[in-house]
Length: 229
Length: 70
Image 1 (cartoon, chains in turn cyan, purple):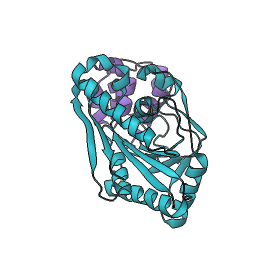
Image 2 (cartoon, helix red, strand yellow; image 1 turned 45 degrees about the horizontal axis):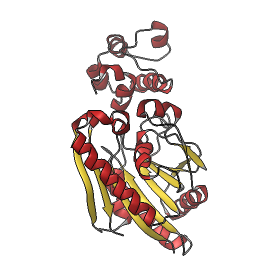
Image 3 (cartoon, chains in turn cyan, orange; image 1 turned 120 degrees about the vertical axis):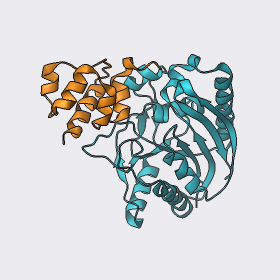
Image 4 (cartoon, chains in turn brown, blue; image 1 turned 45 degrees about the vertical axis):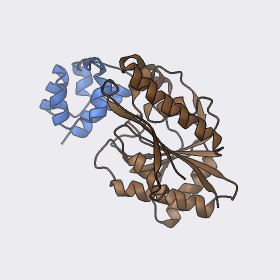
């Protein structure tokens, strides 16, 4: 059995990197300090893989074929993509993907009643790029993106996200090699389902609020929570 | 019901990284199966009306970015 070694919850919004100066400087400093604490703790946990619960903003998926939950199976992801980099104002870059892990997870889901969509190519905007800009500046940990539809109703029920997280925990517990260390990140400004998934994986455990700043000009509450594992 | 096509126009525009105040190019509008009300709201850049007609708010914000103060 593998081990979940970290659980992180953060907000994302384009203006966090695109327009840092429009936020109250003290609020911005407290939020960024919270993310820096999270980054140090995440690295200290020495994860082999980072599962990122996030959501598309209609840059990958459209109403012609809208997955409720989609797992990325790529070996690398643009986070941000070149188009995303323009409005996020951070350089476009590629982050490695843990394809074998992701593929095994999709397979386990299909065998055990969690019918997951998958995608071999995904581009990321603020959804994944903004939190990883702060938490993974050197792209040193391969990621498994799990995207839940939070923006194009009808949406999956929030409770399904809790079950999704619990399924990830069961997969790590039952199907992963003993030495494997898995970190979880749930990210959403308005997309609370991604936070719920991490809480589902951690079964009612508590956490530390490293920062919470409601920043009107960034159009989101900016939270950073480090969960007990 | 053409709100699918309204969103398709916005999705395609967003995919080209175009940011506009309104969409009034008749040839562009003619390429999508839009209702008269949708066409009018796009021509005049009436974002509230577009939302009421079923345009996804994330696409509205992306495409009509110059219309937002923040």
